[in-house]
Length: 462
Image (cartoon, rainbow, N blue to C red; front, top):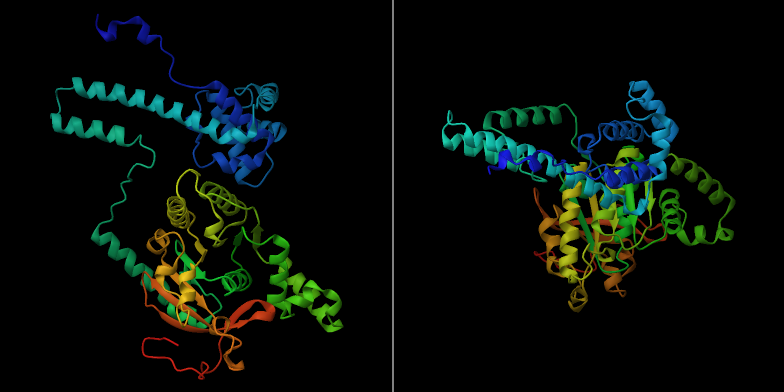
């Protein structure tokens, strides 16, 4: 018997999972923060039931507008759209809110909904491909091409038709040059003039800048100095994922950095003078309106970083993300070796910067080989445990303080630090002079000539 004559086939129900759909919607109604775990993989069309698609649309519109999405607010949203009765009304929404096996598993429920949706689309494509097979009016090559396009379009992350022709590319190039000439900058300054000069203006969207160094060289201080400048001067949103330091310590540093009150006094307030108390109070009021957001959750993997960054982007915007530091992150497969895990993290960080159109400052630790050299100046090969960082980064900036490596240097070296640009994908490399104020844990511009008690060779060695 021909397959098309088999009545059992016509009675088949398209793939779907009402239970998974109920679980996703129920979790979202009870815990809106769960949106950040499913918003990137689900669309209204992925739901089998039309009512579920409309409810998901209503939840999405509320959450993306930073409004609470619960049974009552979603019902009112559906009423305003004229679809409340189609969705079963308030009673049905109440039932969904009760149907939630575990909100912590919402990502997997969403994946099931998405998989069933893709299966239905595969069936639709199969029917169209079958029609092409019987269509003798078109050349076979064209039919195969159309069939291939049908299947490729189903692939998750399938290649997009984003080829840009020479004419379109040059028009975009000229528009970009004219825009920059008018002063519409496509970068943000870092607050460090020498670094901005090397970076041709500052940091740009989609870039990953690795700040690397040995412990106590000032990696976090440099990243926070840049972050504070971006948040304060440009009023751009900055996120800090601090896996090494708790929030309280970072806030102490921020106040010290901004007020120029030594950190040890902020940690022991009885040491502060009346003037410093007043200055600290003024600084706190200024920092309260600064768009900087800090999370100190430890041992994140790339999926968790992605979720947290997307949530921050949606709620407050995100122009600069500081990740401190990659050595404390984990891979999604804990059984994999460390190099493989960090390679996954490095690639994911680069993809995230492009997706969110933000700059990511990724802090990294150097291995002990650097301490075996006489001058202890870092090299690219010193990046710890993972060569993928060197490959994926757009810029690699090493932090080196000669007096930390050689404590017997003179007083003129006390505040001197080097920023060593070991890699810059679209620019030059070299050494820049910086000032590190240890008492206030911040970096700023170096004024005047560099210390001369040691002679720098042509190669830049000390």
